[in-house]
Image 1 (cartoon, helix red, strand yellow):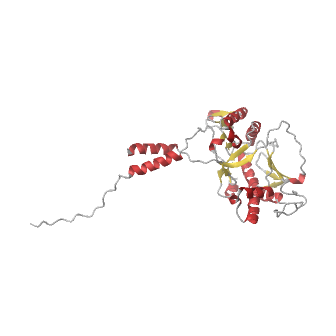
Image 2 (cartoon, rainbow over the protein chains, first blue to last red):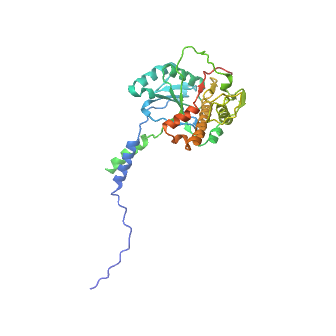
Image 3 (cartoon, each protein chain N blue to C red):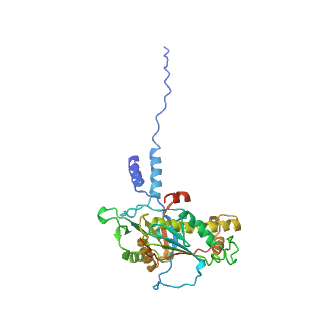
Length: 160
Length: 174
């Protein structure tokens, strides 16, 4: 007896998931390599100003950050404060702290030590100037005013 | 296996921050005890930019807006009053700077000036120098300043050395 074979409908085979772990691992390694852990928790509100003439800071390990802005916690008022590492500090602490930070990097590269001031747009220059004086006293003369890149000069002017 | 990898992946996705810090690089003068140091600089070789507590600008004794600062600074630096600068194409106004090597920009702000305005003005002053350097590098080397070799960059910087002084803030008012 001849049986008539029913023609099977041509179905799309299910997607193979065998390569899924490979893809996930690839992504995992990518993020593991590129990741840098957030070093400090910001205690101040920070909205960086815009600028066009900015340069990238090449070496993160040779850079120290000083944050300036109004405290996030309402109990501390609205007057801009300085944050060094993980705590709020006063102007008087800056000099000693910067010296300590510089001492922690190796001697050959100490000349490249840079301080980056990350200040809020609403901070007043009085406080920033006080910090600058402290940095001069600490002989930390390389300074960067941290800013976000503006697309064009027009954008920059428009924000005023 | 894939589950564990996923878990790790999500962890790294969340913790990762890829911000690169960028900013205006400046160099502070060394600390000196006596603040009232006198320097022999002719009045015409100083370009004074004042910013008050209301973030208004006064450039060379005249009101100015932020848009004008770059142009005015460029004219001042490039003036070449005594004709000793070969790469300059300034107006040679006898009442403005002698040459770029003598020209000094003085930026003075109030303690109440906002950081935002300060950075914007500082940016314009740096931009004035950057544009002049770019210009001379295009004429002399036919290339952008950024593409020049270190020694060529030095040659350009020799023509337009950068003298921007950030004076101590005063209480101008407000």
